[in-house]
Length: 214
Image 1 (spheres, helix red, strand yellow):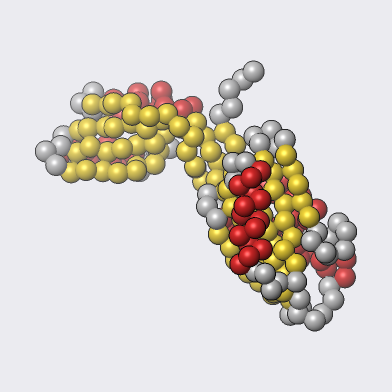
Image 2: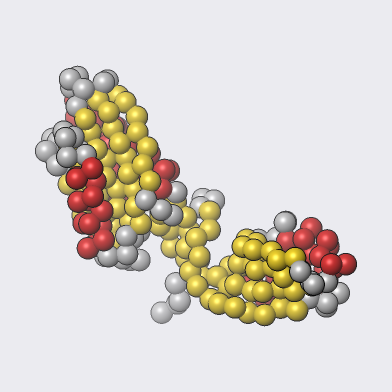
């Protein structure tokens, strides 16, 4: 089986809200590695919004989407949980949960209105929590002298890397994150740009959150 190189999930727990016909909706998303974490997140939201009319939710656990659950939490069947999870599936996210809280404002939305509202709540939650691509990545420590740093810095600002940290002492040492698929070409380019003067030390290999550009 080919090694998994990337998957989409959420960066961090976060929420945002909007109002439709006097009903207040709060969409909250959270990364979760296990179903237990998803249920714990759901309980936190239920406690936080214990006076809400509904706390509808969905979660997808497993890199193969092996566990998928959703609930309408008292809304008419198919108008809340299903729209929430369909938005998540469309974005391709896994290992995360979304809760859309509703404070009823006195105006009925109808089945179609509810579907649209909860779909919007799911999108709001995903955008607030931040969709990222977890890609297998390598961290490198790169050291150069000050005379070479300006050329390297100019190159790195345009290269497919994230500069995590730079330290300016007797020499310049920067910590870089690069996708494993880009690593070989990047190291060749660093050697070229610095005329072979850069000292490059591999530090770690891990799954790292990159912006979702899809």
